[in-house]
Length: 288
Image (cartoon, rainbow, N blue to C red; front, side, top):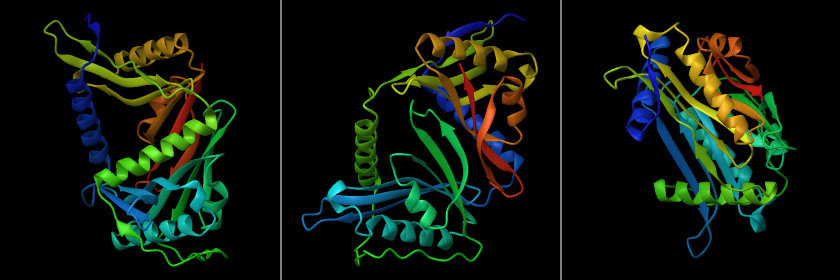
């Protein structure tokens, strides 16, 4: 059967994200709804000077997605205070583990002091730098790190607007460290049948760090094991290489998906064990 390859639309991306999420959660029973928890520290005028965003998935895995402290307020214990608050919030919600990622120009030593364990490194992301994946068990005793310089800070709950401010601040900091353009080129593609119905799709793209990303890859059940997923992946790799990408990075590859990417030449560079319980999730890369 012949299929037409086309650029996918926003509604296609929403569909495959929903279907992939449904498939993944069907592999392991879920416990709750997803939740984002935002904390902030403000100055006397109410401006955010530090904050963090904690993402909790339906398996009760807490991910410290963002932690940021304005430069003039660093080394005063604010980062540590926010980490403690995020851990407390995760435990209160029944999370067993907390994960995070950080670059070599960010806060690797701080997380190590707080008892996080390194479980993988992505080299040359971005070029000349490294990204580290960390995990911490919240269901086991762990010595608490108390910095020598710390104050008592009024940590307040934040909302979506606060999360945007915190995320933008960290993004600006990262751009300043790498001196690379802040750009992203979507390369979302799909196969459709003779009636124009989607049968397979990939959400992917290339950013200013010369890195290709695969966010989602989906094939409708009747069309699996026919090479459509591999063809979409190869097609993206070719486009990404022409765009200047030196590697492709795939996030959130669960153990029931890793075999496919392994056959396509991808290697696990970081792995969170027992996430979800009894399974593992990895970041996988392929050099182009």
